[in-house]
Amino acid sequence: MKRYFFLILFSLCFGISAQNTSENRLDFDEDKAMYLYHFAFDCIDQEYPNKPGQVLGDDSYLAPPRELHPAFYGCFDWHSSVHGHWTLVTILRTFPDFEFRDETLHKLRKNITKENILKEVEYFDDEHNKTYERTYGWAWLLKLDEALLEWDTSEARELHENLKPLVELISEKFIEFLDKLIYPIRVGEHTNIAFGMSFAYDYDSTFQLQLRKNGFR
Image (tube, rainbow, N blue to C red; front, side, top):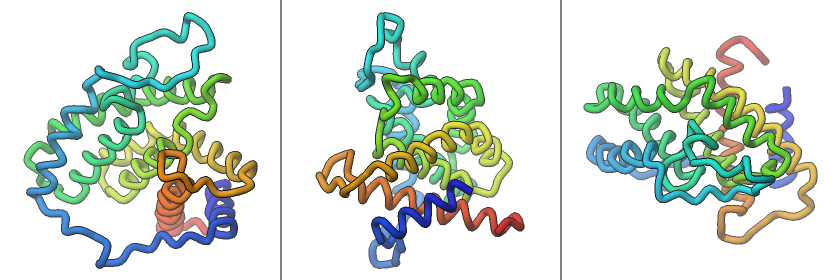
């Protein structure tokens, strides 16, 4: 499968270990979850101010963020919106009885629908925006799906299936990008390869684990 190739290619080319240890993890308790919840919950549907970062092909590209990115239009920019969704999923996965569980689920299910995700796919397939959010935003999308894969509930499976077309497209884009990359991008900004690929490695490891659990090798 492409994702398996993705994992092997990453390991051979970059040799980055994504293993986590107790020393570099902070304790995540309900107080911290509540603190983070308010930021993410409020921002994922806050449309403005907004930094779209798109390439305009013609006048038809001029549209409000909620139309360009119906799933991930809030939080100032696309990757921050995806990050906000990941934060909420992680909170619900970690704390099943979270105080604002129902309200959070409602927002997640309102944004991550099949229709909205297909619209996102259309944007990333556009000839002028094929490299949009490479690789920082791509990494956060994979991180979001990783959290959904690890959250064993019917709601998570629904959101995962809805998100799947965009995840598959971004996975393919990652593979194509690696095939063209002749040296690592080390600048300490969003294009940094180490950050993007460490998240991609985590995602693929989780995906392979899910395959094994379901009887696939």
